[in-house]
Amino acid sequence: MRMPTEDRPILLIPGPTEVHPDVAAAGATPMIGHRGAPSRALIQDVVESLQPWLGTSNPVLPLGCSATGAMEASIRNLPAGRVLHLVNGAFAERWSTVRAACGREGDTVEASWGAPILPGQVSEALDRGEYVAVTMAHSETSTGVLNPLAEIASVVKQRPGVLLMVDAVTSMTAVPMQLDRWGVDLCFTGSQKALALPPGLTLCTVSPRFVERARDVDGRGFYFDLPRHVDALAKWETPTTPPISLLYQLQAALRRMEEEGRAQRFARHVALRETVEAWAKDRFGFFAREGFRSPILSVLRADAYDVAASLDAARARGWWIGSGYGPTKADVIRIGHLGEIDVETLEKGLQTLDACLVPRSS
Image (cartoon, one colour):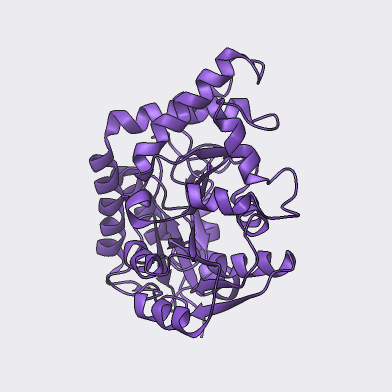
């Protein structure tokens, strides 16, 4: 890992993440037309390389947008009916906000920030109402909670008419997934998270039953018409011009991931979380409940420290570490450890942060 500077810090935030030089260089690959054999080969390669990481044989759609675009697409392509949102942080709540902005009706199951959504809560809510879909965040980036996706999916699977849609923005390719076995109907990530690319590309997988139901939905728009994307992908194309340079970078990143190996990559992310836990135990409390802490980022209660001053001091030394999100901005520190970060680099960042902690004034 390169040495940090004030002008070019090392990123220990939940995203964007560090981009490896080989991946960055792939973005300078000479441009190609987006309707020829080279572009079709590129799209086929990245899709087929990504599918095993997700445990799916379903289409993985490359969308030229931020992950919030996939959130809106999921709502616009849903058949009529209420949506149930599982909310225990800012990004799970965003899905509810997007749904309301699209003029759809829905309800929420809520847990306090730092607590997981539990399968029993989901089962009770589904017993009380009729829903077309359930939405959830797998790794809730505002709190550091890794929600029990497999267990929640098992509950939803018992209601055959209910679709399960998952925000895996920070978790996809950093933790094991078996989307087909679990029965996940829609799942997406953003390129600037665990994939460790620049922002601008979203990868969204959709099940056959999601696509079948979406085809009968009126008013699903044009750019985010997911059946249209699926039809184009059958020819290894996209309905509109794709971000070709980002696809080249994704191809390079997937090659690096294969070289590391799936089991090793998943274990590295767990080791990164454990590194923060060992460092933090005498300094901070964890925001996320034990047993549900994400291996992608650690969110620490910084009651004894001035968060803004401490992080400013660390940034002056070339380490960019995150503050809280929304209502927790002044009270917690969010340390991202995903993508290309290794334990040695994380330890150096933690040592720097240790030296930069500013006690909170009484």
